Structures are given as structure tokens and as C-alpha cells.
Amino acid sequence: MRGKQDHTRERSLRREQTESEHVLWARLRDRRLAGFKFRRQHRIGPYFADFVCVAFHLVIELDGSQHLDQVDYDIARSQFLQSQGYRVLRFWNDEVLVRMDDVLDEILRALRTPHPPATQAPSPR
Image (tube, rainbow, N blue to C red; front, side):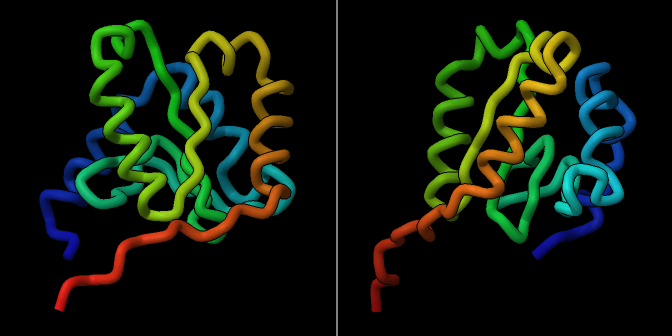
């Protein structure tokens, strides 16, 4: 269940977005990318995804130089998101700033490619 802390954290992350997050959000918001609806800083389990298209189970993560120090965390995060049925696309901040058209093309390809649902173990009874 989402609480007040989650909403506070989401607002904080939105205010503190990087330049690349700001630039990409300008292209994704209000269904600007081929009519697909995206959310930013959206909570999925214990994590906040940079951007997510919930209807198509696609998460977009932007990585900066700080991510070189947290590779294990990023792997665990991606594995969790995939276990929940999400595909995860990762881009470097510089890619968004320098090759925006290529980034958007890759996002569109992922959205238009069928994705099988995650297989989860049955809950123990």
C-alpha cells in the first residue's frame, strides 16, 4: 500500500531530476511518444522507476556516472522489475542528451515488440 512517504519521495525525485531525465520527460509526457502513456518516478515494489509505461510493462532507467559504483544494486533492481513482468531499458545520461532520436527509436521498438508475461512461482499455501 502506498503511503504519504511514497508520495513525498516521488515529489522529491521529480524535483531533483537530472538534465537528461528532464529532457526525456519532455518527450514522453502527455502521450507525446506515439500516444503511449508514461509515468515518472513511479514506485514498483521497493523501487522507484525513472519512467514506466505501465500498460506495456516497460521501465526506462537513466544511468549517470554514479551507477558505476552501484552495479550490483542496479542488477538486483532490474531482476526484481523483470520478475514483476517489466522489461527494463537502460540508457546513459549522455545517450539521452546526444542521441535522443536513437533512444526514442529503441523505446518505440520495445513498446511495439510483444513481451511475454513474467512467470512467477505459485504462492505457497
